[in-house]
Length: 93
Image (tube, rainbow, N blue to C red; front, side):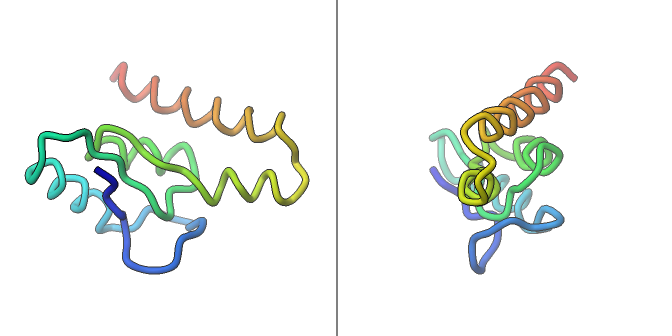
C-alpha cells in the first residue's frame, strides 16, 4: 500500500512532512499489506524517519532530479546506495 506522506505536489522537500509518520502508522493499523511511504522524501535521513513508520519508502523526485540535471546514472546509483546504507544502518539500531 502506498501511503502519501503529505497532501500536495510531489517533489523534494527540505524536511519530512510531520504527517508522514502519522500516515504510516494509520496505514499499518488499517492493513496487513506492506506499507510504503512516498512524496517529499528527499534525503537518506528523511528515508530513515519515514521507514520507522512504514515497511519501506519511495524516493522519486530526488532521484529523477539527478538524472534530469545531467548527473547521470553513476550519481543516481550513488544516491540510491546512500539511501540503502542509511536504511540498513537504521535497521541495525
